[in-house]
Image (cartoon, rainbow, N blue to C red; front, top):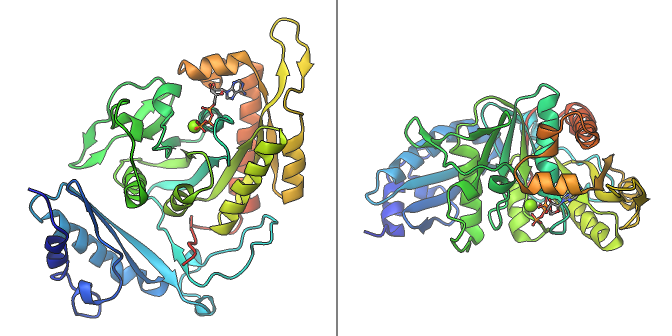
Length: 384
Ligand SMILES: Nc1ncnc2c1ncn2[C@@H]1O[C@H](COP(=O)(O)OP(=O)(O)OP(=O)(O)O)[C@@H](O)[C@H]1O
Ligand SMILES: [Mg+2]
């Protein structure tokens, strides 16, 4: 039996808002999306009132779940700060800071919304690029392993729901188990806790995820997965800087973003867009990695700068963001990556692993100090 939106609204009308009155009359609900027994909507409230609304969010989720035919319900509580509200200083952790990165985006937003962090997860970082195929996923996996080698507990989330890569890059074929009722347990690989939409869908399934479906898939992977305690969660983002990416950048409570680019001009223009996108949502850019920086001939050792080496470093300087390192274009990286044996895990003493570990050190420095300094909780600002 298909669930109808009216049934959901009727259930929500029985949930009380903090001041009394029905939740449905409080003017805080987004559009309610009902698809295949899955229900998704958000409650947007003033940042100062978030605490009072948390039990309401729980009650709303429970009420929706009890409607016959509902398989899962996701209710996001987002906080909105009205102009000038910063002066009241309701909750410092929720007050958006402007990005340190240059780029001219340090303007006031008409309304700032805040994503709550993920319990137990200290920092969420995104690995992104403006353009596809520049090596984001490969960089994300090896960076995550590099952070693991620094003694951190690391998780990975594959947010590329159009073309998830982590099942392949980490050779994961098994399906995640359910724990404690309706939460999923991430898959452990090389000491990383990994979750990908690719674990849940068949490779043959056409991926027509749009608008709210994209949002709910990401939110579900963030909040309905038993991540446990993590020092860092590395998110492999889909390519591009379109609406879908922006939505995702907004849905994930990011501490910062790592931009991957190849050295050539075209890719750099896209990298610039990537930096600008994160600036727009007030997520600090932790730095730029130049991937496929130069080619080292495996047989003669000669170095060729196929894509014009050094472009990303210059671009990082121009944008005023840290340059995190150069990864060569190398057969081993490709072969290992594509067969689910990432170099940092399988050739830890090799030259490539060292490069990724050095990048991991720089990223960690940025998380601990640098770009994210003074930010006690991950936060996201969404333009109204
Ligand atoms: N430094 C490198 N040297 C050699 N091959 C590489 C390197 N980095 C990535 N590759 C290869 O390039 C291809 C694309 O890499 P990857 O999937 O990581 O890119 P992506 O940016 O995540 O792509 P998409 O935009 O499709 O998500 C893969 O076959 C990968 O093995
Ligand atoms: Mg990818």
